[in-house]
Image (cartoon, rainbow, N blue to C red; front, top):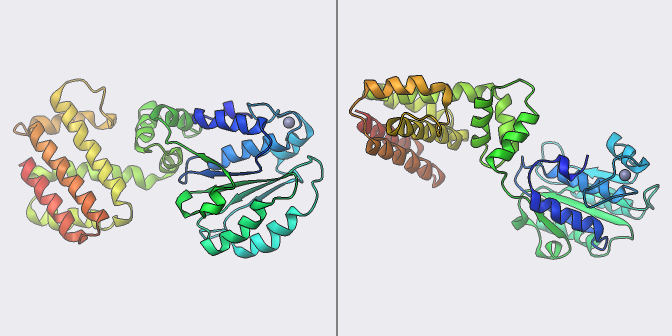
Length: 336
Ligand SMILES: [Zn+2]
């Protein structure tokens, strides 16, 4: 493995290469939301610090240090995760394990590397970590990970080299999903998940395995297709119930809705299916459009606006029921 085996993050790889060459810095911090692959990049950097022949591309992969590292048994590499079920690293771990361990000499690499996922560690406990970051024992390297740099003490930020990860492009996510595509999903579906991941490959990887997600997508589609013929009771009770039962993941549900509406617009505007995200539904959408001949691009646009408004209201914690019913009624008006 080297950085070039990891997909995307070209700018980050360039900076990591420079950090390997300049051995002066001792503390690093990867910041990115969950699902961005922080651990993989942190691991690669850690491997290059214990490797006997590192290059800008990362560890050599051949030396003894690399062999131990890959086996997960390198005696000079320590990993600390947030405690199970907790969102942050425990104080006891910092005080009783990490700090005393930094005083123990390296066994084979001449360096000790600590990969520490700090999570949402409370500010008062970050000071504990700060002490060891301010004056790390010789050869001790800290690679910290967190999801949100704004929760980290400025004094810690000033001691670390920060590596921010950028959202991945759709093409990069497509490559990542293809690489992990054990279920042999067809390209259309992989493309769908790549766009739906919104720059976070982990999201796509999770959704692919989530059978509920695909059935929910079908349900959202059916709700949309039924709207022109739906009566008031159907909208206010059955359809509302669907959304109400999914408040936790409502933004994903609404995004699916927006995409179906976007696809309807594309199909109404042209015969071309190039920009269509839900390829498997093209035939159904075409028959929907021919059954509802009066539907204009303006109507679909207004329906999308109703979805956007609902999404905004949910974020602003407006009464869910009222906001949801408003959306359904507006959509019904546009689709009738
Ligand atoms: Zn090596």
